Length: 195
Ligand code: GLN
Image (cartoon, rainbow, N blue to C red; front, side, top):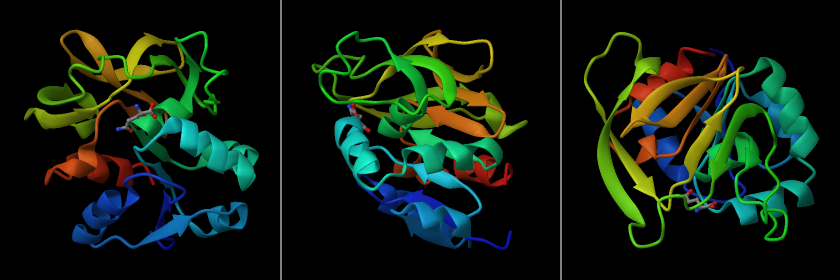
């Protein structure tokens, strides 16, 4: 791998992703401008706030460059990052509160789908993308979206209580939880193997 892995550094917990890649000996680079996409091998869209990510992404005119990048580069979205990658939102009012997903990953998500009363929880999930590892992943869900529909182009690669919590579409990977908030780097390593 010659180019660093890109982290969308507009907003959110990209620093935690950086720490995991650093611990794996992998160089990262922040991406805030379209031209910076030319310098990275893949991109992580971190958790944060999808309303803010939408606003900032459009302000710096990254929307179309990100879609072009995702055609032939791996992209991983976690939590709000998955919301941004998704095709559409289940909540009909989403345009009113200013979330505009990129539409690159064939799934429909519901923001804050686990309700406010359980804003945050950790649960073990089995994840197929890890190729052969049978150990479950301790997934951290923080005001997590729910994946309410998965289209024909995407595959479910992790489930919690029978519901999808991670989907993969070729080199695109999105999950409702935060793999960067654990010491377990298997998901980041699986993402690196796509590069
Ligand atoms: N609820 C947030 C949103 O809608 C996502 C939360 C997160 O990324 N931890 O964007």
